Image (cartoon, rainbow over all chains, first blue to last red; front, side, top):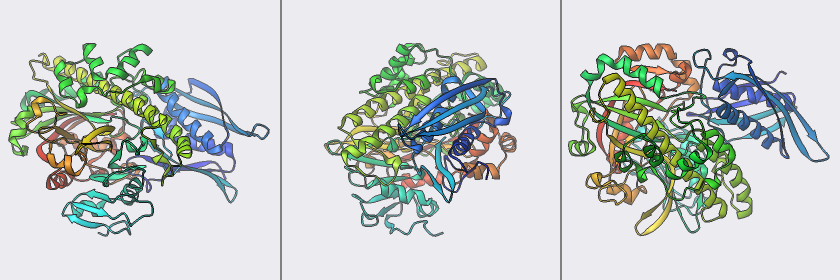
Length: 146
Length: 483
């Protein structure tokens, strides 16, 4: 199964809810991030002139995903960029009991004349927030405040 | 249509409904929903679930309220109002929302529809150029870190001191555009970074700038309207809806995380993670309150700068000064906020999330010029149908913690709206109806179509009948800027 996400408009009215699923944790982080960047702008309309790499670490996997998605929102505001693609690799350090994310955001400066801009995501909320594994599939339920 | 809840919902009056505290384990007070039966039956399940979750929060007083424009939120419903004992009650970012001090501003003019119609295209183009909107938009104000701290402390006063507005704007703003107790020490570095470049920007989603007309036959309280500077005769007014932008959003994000950890220490459990809270008097609670006030002041400063840009756009298009055009601010009022307010000789921490303060005549917190009428309440409807200005009442002070509705309230998800309406088609159709829309995002435009909202007239009738505000005038759109 490929990593995927779907927006769930039956859950929310004013905001955006999505469910991401994947076979691996890394793919789950990629799928969830794609949902967030698609909410902001059509990735196909955004060029790949800007890249930033990150390393994030948390004890809980759910906290790491939350931090990652909030980082995307933060970068959008502080760098004035929207995104074409992302890379995400998650690993677990059992000695330190830490989850690590090595990720990259790829995109371009906001330009309403060339890009299909969508919604300014304000925040990743904790409402109905859930990350886990069910029958071998990793899943995340996320609600974005827009 | 049946109610989408199995809870008992009892009719108190034709427009007030109560869910007894026996309906959910942990409820400390009953929950009350304002609205006609038609409004109540159309409410989504989230409202019933969330307003009763709020009624379980420690220190809540009298009842958890939801206004008739209420709908599913996160933590609190949109339209939620709850007051907490300031001694043993909590404070919750979920009761304020991420867009701290999202609010409404209304500016009057001496222009009429016949003055504006021939130049509407030029006006909307100039407004679209001078008021940045949409994803990633940046304002023209360049702030140093010290400057941002001044903004957080002084609010709209900072903007006026920089030349972006008039002193009379401040006296016609809730709390004169500056909440006390703002301490930038409790605002994170990330929040500051998000806020640095965004002063004077609208944002996106349901935020907008709208040029509206007031027809004679849509004035319902002539005396209050005149006090507000509204005389009808196709008069032009301008409405702004936006908030604290990234700075406020980050303050909300930061403190939900802090409160999640704090709750364990204080032994607080909540029905929804997004209701994360801390005792108001705790260190965490006080730090959030200080940071929230910083974000609220940033929002006041933001709307003040947008007001300046609007006046300059009118100056450019009409070749007269804003003073000559009579562009006085009627009022600016928050609808996402937590404030300490006094009711019946007791102080409460009142959370309003998608609800507006509605103080009645005689309130010392109302500007002198509105002391006899009550406070103007600005309610934004959908861009297709129109908005309202209402006036606060004494009954709001005794029944609803000085609170009322804030807008139309959604009935349709964003995705469903986009499936139903195409942005470009909607834009053309509105132009045919005399409403010129400039939007950064066509999909964003479709999400805000009138069909996605309740009929604001029904919502207004509910609060008018309940007596917690009175209808003053309807404001009909002729031009709209969307992010």
